[in-house]
Amino acid sequence: MVLINGMEADSVSVHDRGFLYGDGVFRTFRFENGVPLHWELQYAKLSGDCKALAIDCPPESCFREDLEKLGKGNFVVKIIVTRGIGARGFLPEKDMAANRFVMTSPLPENPKSEIVARLCDLRLSHQPRLAGIKHLNRLENVLARSEWRDPAISEGILLDLDGNVIEGTMSSLFFFRNGSLHAPDLSRCGVCGVQRMRVLEIGRRNGIEILAGHFGIELLRNADEIFLVNSVIGLWQVTQFEGVCWKKGEMSGKFREWLQ
Image (tube, rainbow, N blue to C red; front, top):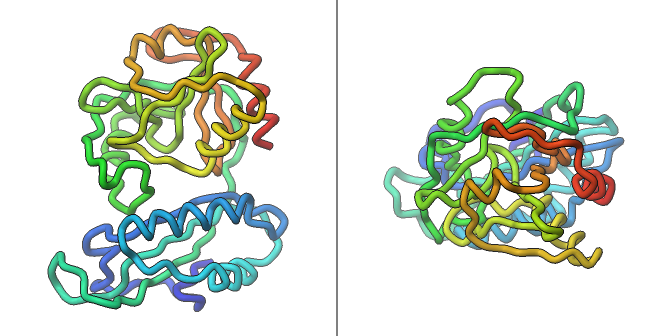
């Protein structure tokens, strides 16, 4: 199903700024038995990202009405908010009416818990104004994910221009070393998603030391455990990366249970 501003449709105006410039934001999450998982957090993040781009986010009540139309099944929901339809040119018009899109797709088959990852050649550029925001300009992720087609490799790890570990092509990255949870700094690039925020909060609640900062690839290779999260896959432990192998990790298992 695809809903555009609450109505079933399957096309968007060529004058929509989301289509023209990637001028918008999005969220993707699981919908189970008629319930959008962690909806309050998802909407808060959507609203916050809209505010950062000065987009007038539609009220939560509009999205709740949309989600109720989806029924009681189990699937993936993607929500997009664009700045709306406007005249040609980069400068947005004043008081534009945002467009909202709600669409569904099947849940992943054969969910994984341990995966193989690779290092991507592409390096993420620095743009602090966009750092943390899940905006529609995802060409870096597209190019990075296009680097491999081997089905045995589930995810690619991205570094920034300075060689710091940032994230996966579609996931947030964490690693354990000497009992501390390490979270890459996202002040210059990367996406701060709902699952990333949940991992950090769960870690704090359970008394785990959290170290946020700039970490190089060698520190990642020497980690005790590496795991990746997003709101669709849940948690994947990386058991093979760049010639290094890890056994099933205790902390990765604990965080998977806590997230569920």
